[in-house]
Length: 354
Ligand SMILES: Nc1nc2c(ncn2[C@@H]2O[C@H](COP(=O)(O)OP(=O)(O)OP(=O)(O)O)[C@@H](O)[C@H]2O)c(=O)[nH]1
Image (cartoon, rainbow, N blue to C red; front, side, top):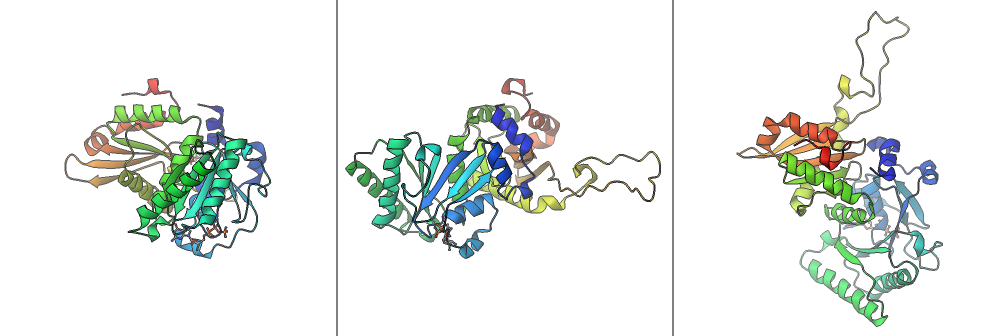
């Protein structure tokens, strides 16, 4: 595993504590910087808050206008620093060269077909073309759930206008991607996960491990999720279908909500041992109050034969493996399955048992 990955595993705080940005770790860790740009009220802060602070989507309504750049740090496989910028920021007022950043996410309200947001996006793409051609430019055409019939048409028009502007400015070589997003469905998680994949250097390693896990466990699909943000860090080679992704996201959300309720003696930070003698009355057994997320769970998706089971295994304090497994395999060979899971983070692909 790379240094980055082990660093992540060693330093991260429990999921429920990780929603706060940590300034102390900002200094210690080299972070991948992501610029979050767009017009006022396009939804930038909502995106950041929903993904990285667990804010319920409906409460984004109460977010205040961002007046200055807010830097939010988040520890996942690659430590991130997300710059949430006010709507009026320009290349000149950003206060940092674009070469410092690994990705630029530009948020456009899907109903905003006017010139202003598109011109601003084009200005940043042109600046990136000159200062940092490696910069990932990802455009989130946001609030997509608001439109039903015109959604695809607006999406197409925004893409076409950006392309036309870039051709006019002779800058069409700069690559960029468009995503339809909304905080009210899973599209935001899926789009941001795709951005994250491009920033995780150890992605091929994780993908290899997942491919081997799937082959050895007869699993048609497996994801490695960042537990708190519910972004998937990697998946196996089979295509991602949105329904499966959404199901895993929902299951994780349910476990995140209810997991802390499940506390057993073995879920404590250190297991209690049977006392050899009566503890003195003034020195009772230590009571561990630290919450521990329970390490595995499963749900049967449809019971009729052959059946599919959705499994969850926490493999580091912050990463969970979610996989679809045939119910027959889960019930008949669970020990072997869990053996594969236990060794997933520790061993290379070649060492996994079949
Ligand atoms: N319908 C819908 N509304 C959204 C979505 N995302 C954000 N909003 C709403 O858009 C409004 C503006 O959201 P903000 O996150 O404050 O936008 P911002 O881009 O950070 O705005 P500034 O701070 O002014 O730059 C809020 O009322 C949100 O509830 C979405 O996916 N769908």
